[in-house]
Image 1 (cartoon, helix red, strand yellow):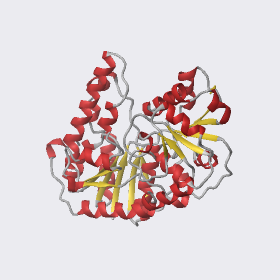
Image 2 (cartoon, rainbow, N blue to C red):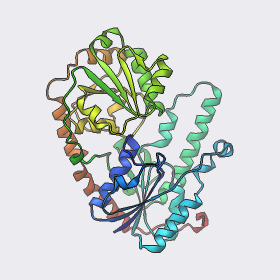
Image 3 (cartoon, one colour):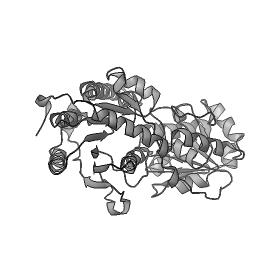
Image 4 (cartoon, rainbow, N blue to C red):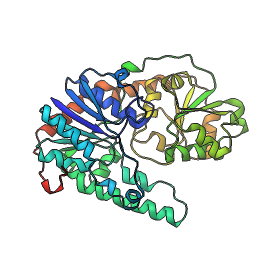
Length: 389
């Protein structure tokens, strides 16, 4: 099968949850024996020859910064990028495409183009995005009005375009229930976030009393989670027992904003790193103190794959099937969980066992193939009045 894969995400390097999801979808599609023409972002100007995947041919596109008019009107939620359309035409003009996979965010406006070409679309969603936006903290009337505007625009996009897909791919049961409000339930398939178990065999020596929190800290849910941890949970007793490393993009800026320093009571901001696995593998435990968000956390799955215990809020492990997390939802309970945690025992191995059952590439490649076969049987709905050439 020939597959056209399109995403706004820059999947490489794999240093963020959304990047990991897209990268492993590409690897799984190629691993199933399909030929994939992948149109991706490359915002970090990576040398893509270092990320070769047999069976995948990369094309890149660059999104122009949004203008003030774009931000005020929100028309970018519905606009097709002429440069992206040209790539579609070039690829489809040179190869017979069986299925298009559109991955992440608000790119449903491209479905009508493929429908006109009689190419079924699998639309991939990483979370319930409108609900995700609704959770974003807003201070003051202006921010609340802006948030309301964005939520309405996102819901309009979802309801206008998502039903036109041959199949919609979600990552969790709560996300499936959300999308079933406006997409026919039989067209919704759950493929949880997953990892290639063969790439998670790293076994670093554990550093006693080292905790890590990995994230893109510019995302509001991660910043707010860190803020809660620092201001309401962390104290001198914890600082005397543990060292906490913040690993990922904008961790320094986030800690600086909260505390005024990049080092605070034995909390150290590492910043962006090329490879995050060694930090998770050497840690005694991974913290996921999230209060907002949806979908499933790839940082959680990475810890499971690397046999590292997880201490989290319920939101931090939401949608992940395992009874072996340490879960605490109040500042006092989270603090107590940390003070009684010693990093020993079988929690890490039990988490790894759960990972292999539900979140390994082998299990989810079969699910992905099922979705492709289903989509291939669907006749696209032709809506030429919405197509932009």
